[in-house]
Length: 374
Image (cartoon, rainbow, N blue to C red; front, side, top):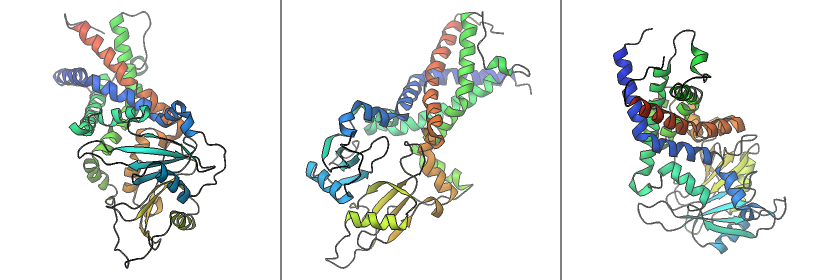
């Protein structure tokens, strides 16, 4: 099919200027995205004293973990991460008081699962690996619509990928020529080949990353689209009626026993104790055999007084739309597809840098006059 030259020229103009004006931010998000694919592994390597238990045994109960963490930090506990292969210790996240509009102030306490001793505590959001994570997610501009800006960049990346595919589309019989680099050619031709090759081989990953990134930041945009195929249910924050005054809450260990009895074929990944806005326990599960980066798949909410399950969002109780929305983060970082998927996303994070540099060189070379690349 012959494309009108006028449309192609306008698309080329839009593609070029969109890339040049937003390229630095796209490159930054791409490089930080590559980093955070393995941010937990990097964090464990940089802070080994916090993540090396005294022994392999899992002797400490959840109640003992919470008591040890509370003794080290009196701020309310918002999340408790169970030991796994990457972080083989209990990681307790404390919610400290936060100024309105600021990024949530979180500190962590690491507890040795073999003896219950506190291995250390730290400012969670300002630890190096987590700060890079925030740079990727909000550009460190949480108070100035940083997350939304990153979401807009996701749309830009999608537009660049689609327009780049249209502009790259080769003539019949020239496919392999268009996805490789020729030998013995001019610098401009070499750069042009690199730009096309990098764009093609990273296209699938960049499209997947941009779509899931937009979905994570703007769920209200994606939910109606997903609903055309499978209707998702609203994310719950269930509150239950309070029991009679003086009714004691179940211990954390009792909650664990109830969950293990109700879901004997699953592994608990994290706990969220009751809060002021959600007076239930939320327990999330780790997928058996999944990549360690898949932190959780599915959750249940329990009455803290009776232990009854008040809401179930495990895979067997949710729609396909719910499962996709829950899986977006793991698709985004490649973990859904295991280590190969994460390495694929890691490599794709460098593609915007290659495309920005090669695109910039082509623009600079072409400025004095029109150069024919045929």
